Image (tube, rainbow, N blue to C red; front, side):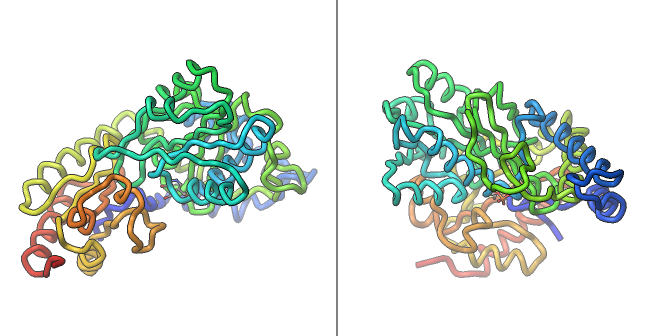
Length: 377
Ligand code: PLP
């Protein structure tokens, strides 16, 4: 199999699977239990928090574990609205966010909030000036992703933080860093973000674990789940110890390769650009700078057919976010691509294991597809 869909989810390394199994079998205690195996489990959760917070570049006590990136994003929208409820009812976000941000924003709109969805230019990016222009006295949250999951654009979070400061805005700044974590610099302090969402399965952890950084400007955060008071009283529920152990191990493995991994992915991406754009009929989509995501189009050929055809040959790519499940992508729509370019969009995404020979195989398969299938009319 040739796997070029790391932005959908990453393969789980054997060391991670071992850490999960070891925890399930040997460290099964409830972290809240007041005897040996409970204390062991509690210590394990604390170590996992240190590891993930260390990789993100934040204090462990400011990182709450969640079940996924979607949960972290949903929580942010609710808690920022709650914190700002006396200050205003305006939110700024972008038209290219993941649906984990867009859908809760739409829910708030139905409750009377006003949401500004900033549109990208053709390159797929958003500027800090756009945010500054949209800012209002009653803006309580600015939520802009760090790396777009479909076009690979890196959005200017530090500049947006600066713009909020210059405008004297009290709005909280959130960034969905699910695609940024361990791929581009993502420390909340360097970014100037109050809230940062991440997800485990994009970096080799099992599915079902994520985290949310809550900065000092998040005052008395709205708990996501009420109950036994786990996760600093913010998200009750017995901790998912095995998933957390897998998350921490995956992060450790990625960190150990951090010196070389982004350079490796950038080299693969540069190779892919050369190789694929040399194919007649293939165009680049947007100008995303993230080292691991590249959007292209086999212009005029429906991407659902390409994905299926490649899949039958053991080559896994996607036509956009896996969450769209084949529906048209709002990101490519917002970028204003022509109908034919939009029809043929493919998102390629690379991981530590991706080789240039994988790109060669993809190039051959794309040429075969172009030469043997019918384009749209
Ligand atoms: N945000 C972005 C940018 C993503 O790419 C994804 C997943 O594709 C999510 C949020 C949701 O993360 P999860 O799958 O952990 O819920």
